[in-house]
Every structure is written in structure tokens, then in C-alpha cells.
Figure 1 (cartoon, helix red, strand yellow):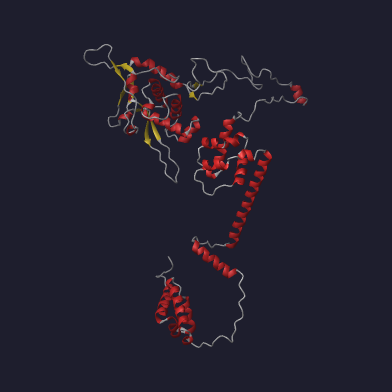
Figure 2 (tube, helix red, strand yellow; figure 1 turned 60 degrees about the vertical axis):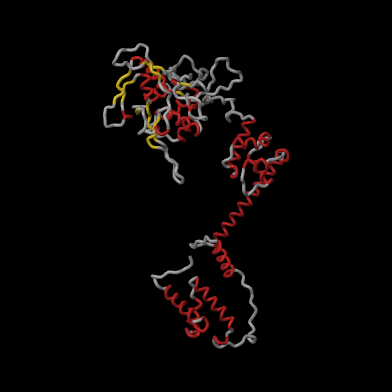
Amino acid sequence: MNAVAAPTALVVPSPRSSGSPVCGAVDVLPRLFVPEASQWLSTSMGRIASEGYSWMQAVHWVAGSGLYKPRRHRSHGPRSFGPTTVRVAQELAELFPCRPGIKYLVRRTGLSERSVEYHLGMLREAGLLAYVVRGTRVRGSSAQASEFARMIPPEFDAALGIRTVLRDEAAPAYTRSMTGIAEAGRELMAKLARKASRKVRKPRSKTSSKSPAKGARSGTEKPVVTAVSGEVRCTPMQVGSSASSSAGTTSSPPESKLASGDTKPPTPKKSKAKTGGRRLNRVGRRYQLARELTQELDWLRGCSVPRIAWVARGVADAGWTVTDVRGWLHLRGEAAQVRRGSGLLAVLLAGAETILDTPAKRADAIEQWRGAQEAARRHRIQQIRARTERYDGDWDGPTSQTIQRQVNEAFAAAFGPQPQAPAPDTEALPEVSGVDALEDDVVAQTRAEARQQLMVGDTSLITVAVDAMGREDAEQLYGADLVRRGLQLASGARSSVMTYGRR
């Protein structure tokens, strides 16, 4: 049993009956498990803890009682209610209201998001937490954290013989308060109080080449309880002393030398230890390169870092950086559509460390890649500049591709170079007087064009013909029906109660 575990309390004395006493009668507590439907404050069988200190007593009791076994209800997640769960509970005990976010607990405990969710679920299943408001995750808005109520399970009250009373009969059952405790549970309550007053922190990893002796417990099973030392720390500027000091060899120069400027203040010696952090081994370099690749390459976003580390193990062992890989991928060629990023990367990196086997070759590939990037950047700038100069103004370009093509054709026809048309031969043109001199196919084509323009709401052909030739000649050219419809649409376009156009 770990250091945070309380003595096992599976068997407790049974309450004394009103009849004849039975010596040695005991009651066995049931196993702790709260189903999901009962993990809400309104459906919980426990009572609300008055403050975080008393709630931590119940947490330590559950950790040591062995009544709750997570693996009895699921095949994954933590195997026991241990020190990590107690560390998560300590963070919750300091919150009021108890509304922690997953990212907040990850930052405070150093655990992963999945581990935090596991331990929150264990606290709910053990009856120590109950939902007040469940968090939501709505697409397009920020996620809302869940609000919990710190609960004391009824098994804790039964094990220690705690008496509770509901002071207000109209209040819910979870508002009952503690009024006393049995004599047999006082000693256990005192032990739980000492455990609740200490801080359980993340254990430090011990990097030792020697294997631990037999019977010794591993560092991950023992929590570290930190305490504030009462020793006086001694520095050159401090008035006082202590029994032992690490700064015993440090001394201040005489005041006379400081006043005359003969002696400079002593400077601390630089430590010979490396400040760049611990040195990575071969596996660490693989994972570092894989993590950088998933961040740099868009088509590797979301891929598993261990899988990418295995795929890129050859170039990682050869000392490649993420820039070297980018240069090689530029020479090798990248695909426009990627279905499986890790598989494509395995194909592209095949034989890379044997082809670019020297730093000079990798540097040349990097220069080519950076040159291509610079050329692409300049090309994008030219495109944006040309588009801005072309459509400079308050007018917004159309979004339809068909309309964009028509607009481009119109701009080309209006502002592009015009072909030089040959001079008309006036002697070859026949003299046409009136509409009667036109041929039938020309008149039919003219009426078809006017009918097509009327279908899209354009009446310019008919109105121009009426204004130039008169209505009678216009009816001979386009027909009376088309002229009548065109004039009706032209007059309706000027009205405020009629709109038409192309949908």
C-alpha cells in the first residue's frame, strides 16, 4: 500500500441494536462504485464536504481502503486509486467553486489530458465528485469547464461511525452535516487528518545506473511530501549565521578597497555543468525530429509522433535536422494530395541518408529549397500586386467563375490592343432604304437577338430602335409583340414597385 493510503477499513463494528447485544457482530462495507447516472449532485447518495480539508480526509480514506478498484469496471486506464489521483484531488480541493479546466489540471499536475480525464472519472466513480454543471464543447465557441461538488461518500461515514443530521427537512439529502463520530473511528480520523495536512507532489525520477536493492520500492510508487525547512539560509548580505552554509568560502572585500576602487566585487564562478538541458540519446533524437516534422509539414499534422519517429529513424540517426529533411523533400518532390502522411514520408525518405551522405550535399539541397521558397514568395507578391492594381477601387470582384470569365473578356476587349479593321469599301455596299430592303434571315436573326436580350431584362435594342427609327419601323424590324414587351419592361424598370433581373 502506498504512502497516501490509509489503513484498510473494510470491516467496521456494527451499530448497537435496541435488543440483546451480540458480541463480535460486524458489517462488511460494500465495494465503492457510483454509476454514471448517479454522478450528479441531484442523484448522489453522499453529502457535500464542508471544506477541502475534510474532503481530502475522505480522499485518503478511499485511497487506502481498497474499496474502489478501477479495473473492475473498465479494461483501460489506471489500475488503482493511487498517489496521482490524490495529487489531482489536491488541486481540486483548493478551488472554489470547483470548476477546473482540463488544461488547467494538465498545467498544474504535469499529466496528459487523457490521464486527467481518467482520474476525474475515478473520483466520480468513487463518490468523491458529483456534477453540478457538465462542461460543453460546441464547435465554433470556447469549451466550458465542468463544475463539480466535492462529496463525501456514505461508505466513509459508515466506516468511521460518523453521525449526520439533516437540519432543514425541506433541504436535499446531500446537505446533511456531521454531528459526531464513534469512539472507534477517532484514531483513524486523526491519521487521515495528518495525511490531509501534508502535500503529495510528483516524485522525482532517480537516474542511477545501479539497480535498487531487493525489497526497495520504485520512485513512482512513493509520493514525495515536501516540507518547509526551519534552517536559516546564510548569504554574504545576511546578518546571522547557521550551523552549515554552502557559501562559507565567500567573503566581502574591505570597505577601504571598495571605497578607493582598487578591488572589484567578487564575481561568482561559472558552473561547468551544461545549461542546454540533458543530452538526447538516439531514440530521443528520433522523437525530436518526428515532433518537428509534424509541426513543420502540413500534410503530417495529426500523425502519430512515434510512427513518424520510426519512419524517419534513418535520417535521424544520420544527424539530419528538420531543415535537411525539407531540402531533401524539395529535391524528391512532394505530392499535392496526401492520403496517409506516414506512408508517403516513408516512400520519400527511402535512401535519403545514402544519397545526401555529406553535410555539403545537404547544405546544397537546403539552398535550392530556400531559393524555390523565395521564388514562390515573389511570384505570390506579383500576383497580389497585379490583382490589386487591376481591381483597385471600391468595386468587389464577382465570385462566380462564369462572371469572372465574362469580366476578363470585357476588360480585354475594352483595354486590350484592338485589331486594325480594314477600311470599308463604300462602293461594294448596297444602298438600303427602310426595313423592307433587309433580307429575311437578317430580320430573323435580329428578332432572335432581341428576344434573348428581353429574357434577361435588357431592352436596349428595342428602345434604341424606337428612338432612332420610330415605333412603326421598329415594329417592322422586331415585330409588334417584341416592341410592346420591350417598352413595358423599359417603363417598369423606372418604377419603384417593380424589380427584375437575373437570379
